[in-house]
Image (cartoon, rainbow, N blue to C red; front, side, top):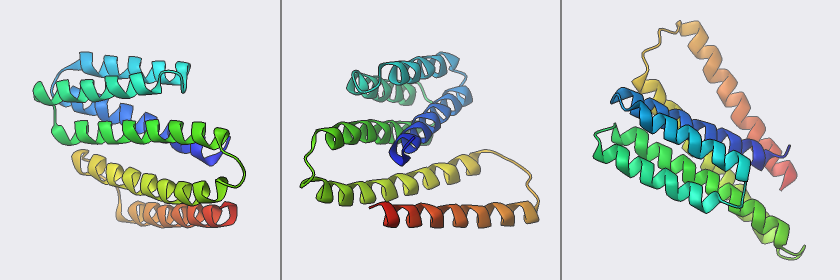
Length: 162
C-alpha cells in the first residue's frame, strides 16, 4: 500500500470521527450515521463516486451547522473530506500522466502531502482540546517525541521517494 492511500484512509477516518463527534455533542446521532454511510460509500465506490461523496459531506456539514452542531468539528470534517477527495483525484491524474509530466506532478504531491500532514496535526490539536484526557506528563513527553520522530520519517520518506 502506497503512502497516498494510507493518507487517504487516515483523512477519511479522521473526517468521519470528527463528524460523529460533532453530531454527538449536539445530540444529533442521525448525522453521525449518515456520515458513516457516506464513508462506506466512498470506500466501496472508490474514485467513481468521489465527487458525489464530497458533495454529500459538504451538505451534511452545512446541515450540521444549521442544526447547531459545533462549527469547528463540521469545518474540519469538510476539510478532511476535501483532502480525501483531493488524494483520490491525484491518484487518478498520476495514472493518466506520461513520464515527462510526472516530475512536476511529484513536486506537487510533495507539497500536497505536507499540507495534509499539517491539516491532520491541526485536527489532532482541536480534538485534543475538546476531549478531557488526564495523561501523565511523562506519557505526554513520549507521545511528543514519537510524533516528532514520525514526522521526521515522513519527511525522510518524501525526500527519498520524490
